[in-house]
Structure formats: structure tokens, C-alpha cells
Image (cartoon, rainbow, N blue to C red; front, side, top):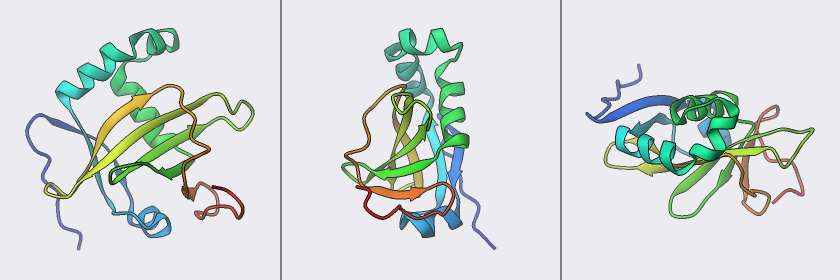
Length: 136
């Protein structure tokens, strides 16, 4: 039986990296949280990009975390959850997660409506669960 994760005060659970995906991507399975204050920061920092989409920061994070198509390696013990539109590759959105080893949780570090990710190592891709051969 899996142990129950305690979400610290001031944090909101926004998702989870499942054991299946974690094994395939070689990362830790854990809940994903965002600090309430950081959510306000994301809202303020990316307001001009999110408002035309009719989204607030919380909704944006939830959409990416439920519809991500790739996981890529980031710097400093972090991963990128990527939602990429195959028909329009420039329509790439990301959530960067950092592993908090004390809390045994992934924390949302940043959320960006557009970002180049092709130079980041591919850890997992929706469909076969494994990086395609020849991809970075």
C-alpha cells in the first residue's frame, strides 16, 4: 500500500507523477504541489500571456499537468512537463518541477506559455513512454 503524502500548509496539490511514468522516465513518483504565493507570482509574471487564453495560473498549471506529452530534463534536479501541439510546434507550454527531497514532493518552479525545449534531454514521451531514438 502506498504511503499517504502530507501536503504542507500553504501548498496546493495540482497533480502527481505516477509510478508507471516515473519508472519509464527514471524519475521519482510523487505528488506535485504549488506554493500559494508562487501561484500569485506566476499569475502576475505571465498575466499578459494567460489572459488572452482565458486562463489563470492555477488553470494553466492543471491543463499542462493533465495533458503533458513529454517530460524533459531540466537543470538543478528539475524536470519539464511539456504540452506540445504536434500541428503547431511553436505552441509549446511547460511547467518546470523541482524535486523537494525533504517533503518528497515535486514543486512547481515556473510555468511558461512558450519555451524552446528541443535542446533538453527527452525522458518520456506519451504513447510509448520512452524517448524516441535520435531525439535529444
